[in-house]
Image (cartoon, rainbow, N blue to C red; front, side, top):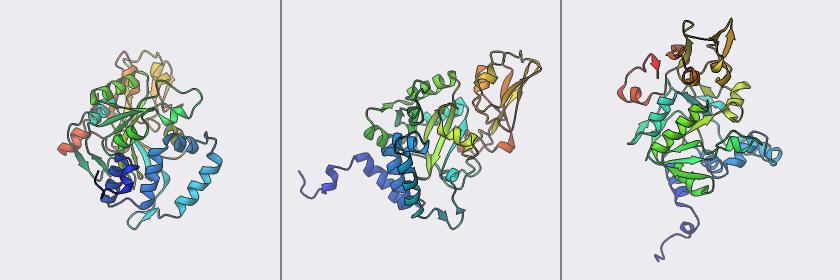
Length: 317
């Protein structure tokens, strides 16, 4: 054994070293971001449980976390004060866009997606080893007494994130292939759940996961519903062809954002509430619903269009 090897090598996990190296190379992340990110990735079930107020330690750790975080800078000279939603948010993605994101077979670097991710922090799409994916048991679902099942539907994508989660949570996470990730996305779509690409300041200011969310379990959807604007539209809205709509109300039942209601026997879409997830489209057997571009909803996270410098298509599959 090499005597020059540092003693820390014996108890620091390889994935932790990789995460630390990525943090050291980052230009935007602070020391607090590193600490925050380590806590978030190392103890996600406690973290989410406390955040949702459902963990026994919520009353103690919640105030303590706020006190500690207040000691570290939360502002950047060019941006001003950073809000909670600026640091942690999701981008809604229809199934085909989400599937493209888990089947990228080469590194990807898009450091600033301001037009796509309308937040002041955490809007970089930088994928290293994108074929490295871990399926994690959803911390939001774990925080509920009667969660939606199955629960291993959070997809952690690329390094150092997938390795960190797989190494630190072997009983709750498993390595999967891109093909298996697509299957999970398709199965969650069938259940009527929404695909969100999540970005977080503590995750090196960038994309790190695709979560498959339901309104009953998802903490981000709950926060958004209660006034914290932490979800960005897909850039599309659902449009109903009333000549084809039979008024079956299936789309209303499956809409996770409460954007569809029945009026005079036909489906009506509240475009203000609609986030363009496409669940209603997949559930309409008559093809009456479709996703169409709405410039007022922002730019889609369309990997192919972004890579080629093209405008996203006017309709989504």
